[in-house]
Structure formats: C-alpha cells, structure tokens
Image (cartoon, rainbow, N blue to C red; front, side):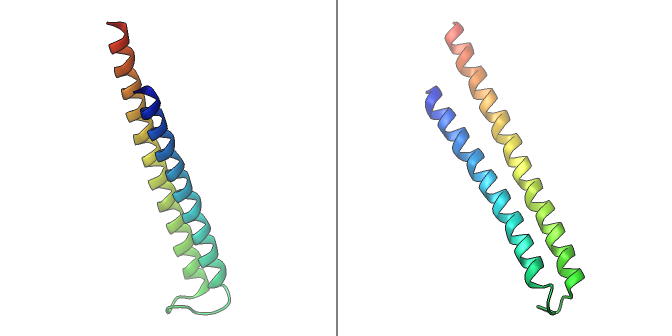
Length: 86
C-alpha cells in the first residue's frame, strides 16, 4: 500500500512541476513573440504584464498543488504508521 501511495504522490508532484515550468516557458515565449509588434491589440509592455501575471498565476497554482499533495501524502503516511503500530 505504501508503494502505491508513494508512487501516486511522486506522479502528481512531477505533473505539478511540469505544468509550472511549462506555463512559465509559455509566458516567456508569448512575451518574446509580442516584443516586435502589436498582437491581438496588445502592445509589448501589455504583453509583458500578461506574461508576468500569467507566470505568477501558474506558479501559484503549482505551489498550491504541491502543498496539497504533500499534506495528503503525509496524512496517508501517518495513517499507515498508526495501522502498523497497532
């Protein structure tokens, strides 16, 4: 049981990290693409703002997912240890 819980926790954390880094990379690319011209009616400074806010939002979501998974994992670990101590 512990191995499946541990494997699940690592998989979710890995997914959260991938989403965070991917979102940050997308924000950087969108900012670089907009630096040369007006795209979708936004100027380069506006695209920079969108990139920063988007990167912060994606980073915050990644952090929250990481915290939730860590808390869940620790609760599962505590449950297993309590069962073993009986």
